[in-house]
Length: 302
Image (cartoon, rainbow, N blue to C red; front, side):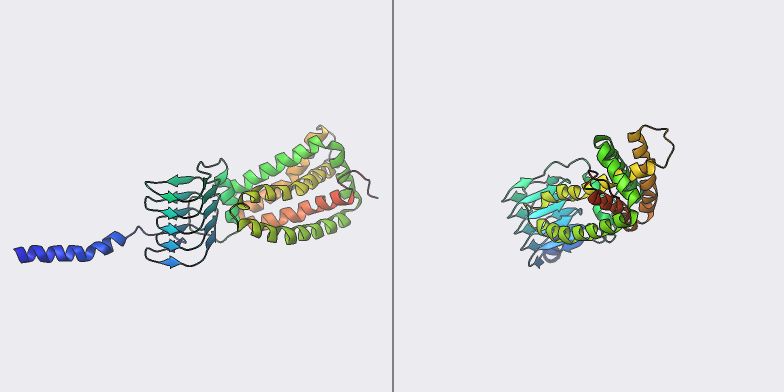
């Protein structure tokens, strides 16, 4: 009997390490740093979960993907529009920053640096879903449906463009006149300007995303880049409204014109988000070109 008990105890002790290391299966498509594994350098993903059970010697960064730390990170942990979960035995030697998604800290999770963005920000999930449009599917089921994202973005663009038409009626009317006077030139200038903005914005955005301080500057930078297109879109709405019977007030007619332009893009966005984004910049680029030619509606283009 004693020998059987000793054998059972020895077997239990032999299996204990394996049972202790056993972990729940990772979500489909997740980047997993397993227990006992060491990742040398930085770890970064786009719209893909990161699970750290072992050790990461650099930073852990995710754009719109959730991050779960159960092991050790010797750098910073940053998630833009995605949540961060720090397990009870997590240890982060740097800082933790969640832009929009919030931070859940369990038990005695240790953070040597600053802990920023603990509370989730309203709209963070929408931002995450928008970011997911520009990445491969990750198999995560917590994203908003693409049709809902397309409609939400279309409504935001409609409201902002209508606001431009309401606040700057003469300027947007001047942009509409320039577009009607020189449509080909407006489209060419808008296309060249879009290409130039992309060449300048992509490296600048990449540099900001690599730093803990620069990452929060990305959302306002992206919003700022959309402003000229929305202003040009308001001018396009003015140009389209000028061809319709004068039934509505000028500002409302401009809004109806913008809606007529955005409606097909929303329908395309529900099925093919990348094509919808490309079409938006192609179409709104003509309005941007007209705004540049007319110095944002200040001068008449002949």
